[in-house]
Amino acid sequence: MRKICNYIFLAVFGIILLLVPALSIAMPKEITSFYENRILETKPELSIQSLANGDYFTGWDSYFSDHIVGRTTLLKLYSGIQLALPRVEVNNVIESDTGALLNSTAQEVFNIDFEKQNMDNKTEMIKNIAEYVQNSGAIYCYVGVPEQRYIYYDEYPEYMKMGTKLVTYAEERIFDALKDTNAIAVNMRPVFESLENPKDYYLSIDTHYNFDGALLTYRTLMQKINERLETPMKIYSDDELVFHVSESELIGAQSRAVCNLQSRKEYIKWAEPAQSVEFTRMDNGAESEPFVYKQGNAQFSAYGDYMSGDMGETIIKTNQTDKPKVLMYGDSFTNPLETLIYASCSEFRSLDFRHYDDMTLYEYIDMYKPDIVIAVRDNISYNMSEGNGQYC
Image (cartoon, rainbow, N blue to C red; front, side, top):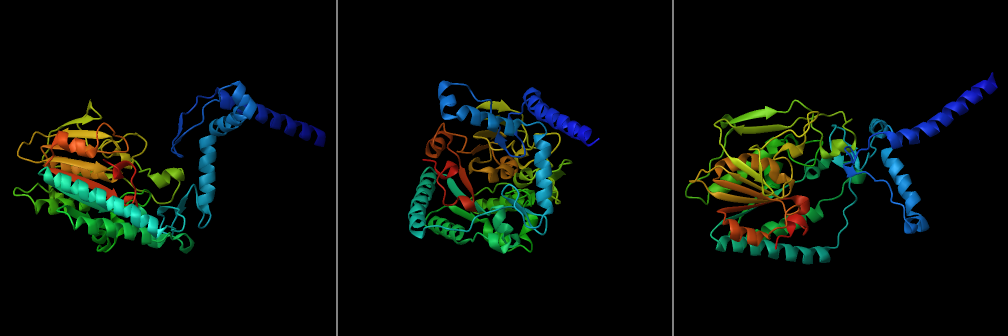
């Protein structure tokens, strides 16, 4: 009987050894891993060189690892087990005691001499663009927004608190430099910190603010702009907006990393003017549907549903000729702001220099001739020169 059991075990084990790779090869292949937010490995190409250096066989190992049958189920199982353990990082994400998902971070280490020189360069760039915009007859606005980790800083375990000295230093340098210009400077960190509970204005499972945070930023910015205008731009109050909440759960940047198995769930909120403002829209030079919020997946909602995510160039025309032309540039923190500001413009344009390289910012201003130029930066980007930090 024992021999029979051994034979059965060996037979089953052998079938599994044959079946798993066979199914992994035969099953339809995904190009990307949704939960890992990355492109999966493709089949390695056979060549004399890849055989000689071993890359061909290593490539097959990586390919089977990425395409093994049941891989998504295994990812969810791993995430579920890890989330059940106390204070364990899962794919660089930690779940706090309140259920918030926070990006794990290393201790803050920086060279102050390097950062001083770096910020000297950054502040010089900002002064130059502010002066250029002013000389063109337009208004320049710089908006700084805290990233989620700085709102939820107190929920990090003590061993993981990364410090705030570098971000604070960069912030002080930026806004001190703006004082030397005629720019409108909007630092949202003290605005959020003055609230009874700033966390109510931020997503707990993503790196961004929620719609209430975007709405507060929009109104703070617009009020500052109106102080400079002879004819103020319309600022929408709550009773002039129709609010919506997605029926599908939000999958945020951090919740994606844990396969959306976290205990805390959230939903996307957005709004539109109660009195509709008709407009046309173009994205990256092509005509688009006229929308500012659109759920991209039937099963879940995402922060990228605002404006359909990060676009290199978006052009919205309302043809309200008595209203100003506005240009906004920045990373994904601009997206929910765009869903509101366009309605108070004759023409609204948004640039994301991570995805747009047809013109520099200076060239675009010369071509478009906006009345108002708005930069939006999150506080971990103040000292960065890539993407929207480098526009000349």
